[in-house]
Amino acid sequence: MAKRTPVIEITSYGIYSHWDAKAKELPKIKEFTQVVTAEEDVEFGFIVNIKKAKGELLQFCIHHPGIINKKGQVLAPFDGEVYVRSNDWDFYLGDTIQLLCPVNGLESNLGEWRMTLEMQGRTIAEKTFKVVGRDEGQFWKSRGF
Figure 1 (spheres, rainbow, N blue to C red):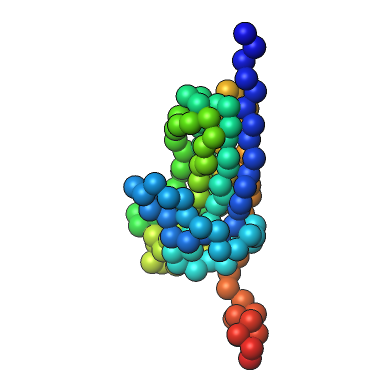
Figure 2 (cartoon, one colour):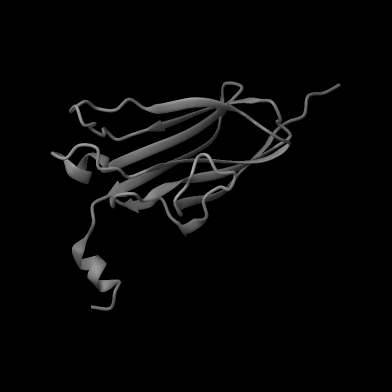
């Protein structure tokens, strides 16, 4: 019997509502974008739908641009593994802008954040988000001033 080929599709990406990892519900998309303004607690990432792959092992990784923690050390990429839970499964991979180092503020969050998902040694989904500083002029212009 031939092995079924998984079907993978990124269904949304960008800025999301707050996500609770303990909840069953995935976060809701607020804005489709790959450019994220560095504001504390902004949630961003992507949702992928995976079909015909129940039980397969997914490896995920979030490559940070050089975020500095409270001890002044650069954070290593965040990675982990999860098993596909059903034959039609949605998975959220994302992160939040955080103020970890009071000295550098949000500036250590600036740059490219690359998020990848792998299955069976192959990259099945990836997105790169550019986190940028807040443009005060654009902020006020978007509010009608």
